[in-house]
Image (cartoon, rainbow, N blue to C red):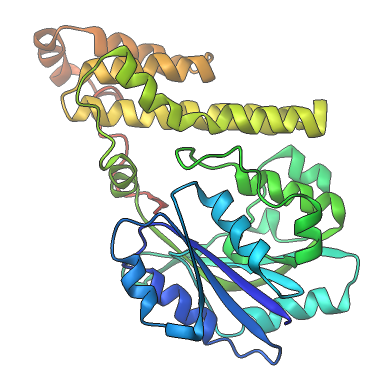
Length: 344
């Protein structure tokens, strides 16, 4: 077997069929298999996958997170190469043909990735994911300097290399919000070149940030503002600690910039959730989000201002709000965004 396509999926009933179809529709001369790992889906994902019959291999597991799901597919794979595809992305028909050939002709290459086209929910193209400053094969030093724009769905790697690095770090549990792919691609880059194909061979689905965060928070709203309830919520951001620990253990001082970036990212995520809470009239929850954010990013001065605003009595803030400039008022009271885009 030449290529094993590994598709982890969790509650992707609206998009999983298109993802699988794009893998099966590859104009590719080599042999391939499509492995879909259902990570404890609770929606209609399994029914959508059943329509493909024996054209795919389906692995079902309890919800354990995307790292565990990808690793299950990689372990079950029989291909020389592993091609990753997320359950809400799609490939162009020539994706494998244009990436596998790079690995075939360059034994020193550990993996290959391509550009991607961001698309909205209607399929309208928005922009390229990889900008001019990153449109090349990166050195390891470059990847340790800043987050390199490598989407999992664009990556094809050697199965032997993926197994040698231990796959995706399973310390990133189901509740965590990212970082496992960045760490894995750093480990791959240590093993050899991470080659870049400049063409957009993946359609990467995005939508408005408000909907993005609303979907993240759906079913996770706190019923109380108790300390225990908030601590349970805040555990969703433990990826920052996991990522920082793995970077320190493996890269030492060389990993300090990405460690700081990870903490800043989580601090910003918590501020965004806090601003959503303010917009929804939940200042107690917002205060907890801001305080937690300051644990990660204590130098974010605007967070102190937002925290002070969230501590004002409702009557006082209501009287002051009309006197503020519109931009400042939104910064304090939300919503945190308007029409910018974000990952599903």
